[in-house]
Image (cartoon, one colour):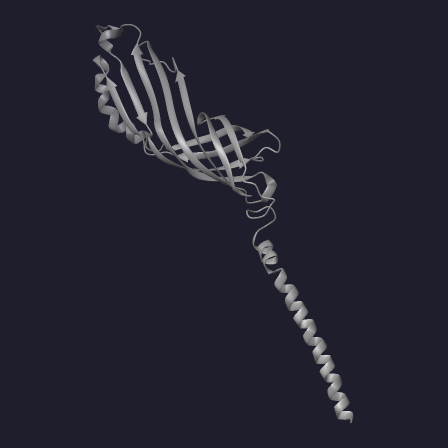
Amino acid sequence: MKKVVLLFLIGIAFNAKAQDITQNFAAAQQQPLMASHSAIYPQGAPGLPGFKHRVELTVFAGTQGLGGDIRYGFLPRLTARIGAGVTPVNLPNLVQVNEFNSQVSLNVNFTNVHLIADFQPFGGSGLRLAFGAGYFIKGDATGTVTPDEAAKYGNITLTAEQLGNMTITSSWQGVAPYLGLGFFRTFPRLFFNITADLGTYYLPAPQTTIIATGALQPNEANNDQLQQNLSAYRWLPVIQLNFNFKL
């Protein structure tokens, strides 16, 4: 009789335990996707209601000139911007030539289109790692030497026309990788904010030309030496302020 009672109690306990396991398994089956989704994506990531693909319009000014970007937010910490910049600089009477009075001017004309990604490694800190590339449609620096008056060499006097003129051109045209840092929050909380960028382009090797007339024409033979001297000048620093407008 005691064995029958003992078996009966064991059966009741086993049945209760089985019901608990069944209920727990059913409850777990009702929420598996929510738990796994939250573990994979942080709050506000794509696929959750808190995330929005934001867009902004940027007008910038700095060492790569004046220009604009359109920025798009792919992920909470990853954005990309596409845009263009123009650098029109004209410096008349830049230096003086010792041998004769002359007008020496420098004209810089850089035009680029670029695609740059920005990654925030520390969440909302405002620090960005920027990487991408630009294509320099134009990358020209042109110096011109034009004599103002006659010059005397010993017993020989040469007029300004006889001296001639000289034009030196260096061109950095082509694809240039970009690497830099960005500072402050990218997308405005309301409508407008200001950010900053510090970085550099690595330009293609420059191509140089020297075109001269009159007594200055022998300087054309120095073109190979000039190109060699400028071959290391490939870093274009970027220091700029960005004026951002929320779209």
